[in-house]
Image: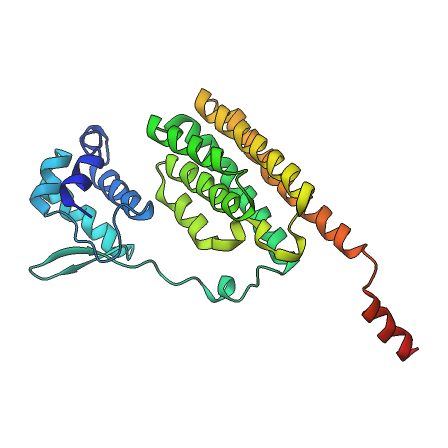
Length: 260
């Protein structure tokens, strides 16, 4: 990433007016990492450049970089500077899960409910105009076919997480990965007319979240996110029941009869 664009996009001058300069500078840089504007292997601007851009002392910069190093977000190399580290591997718990395991998907939706309701509330009061425009672009793409809609759905939630200005919300979604959007489970994915209607409902629910965030209404944004995730869980449960109620294929029935 170009260092000058990183410095200009960091809005560090606002950091200098806050009480805890070290933690705010560290958070601003970690947000750039979490949202992908700083990639693994990128070198951070020099101590002097960061101090000048943020309007803080070099001591503050050194302490902020030390905090990032302790969080395993960057590593320092003698005489070369500080470099962004790759994200840590997912835990064995998440790596061992299968996207087709029903109980796991329902559990992930429940976990998202506990986290993303607060994210929506924070985004409503912290979002920027640029983030609203990005939410609108993702919203337009949600109904453009199943695979495209899945990517846009996940992107909507990632943008919203970034709008909280707390990088750990975005890292949480990255941690969940494919579990964030249960439509990935093929056999239970809606098809045909059901798919069209389903995507329409998804679009309306996301639009309600978007509108609440645009109004700056944190309580409404939280309520709309809660409704969306609760509805997602209910819809997925309903598809499970519908699939389990289908008659067994003829071949399965024949084998069962042969064993009788």
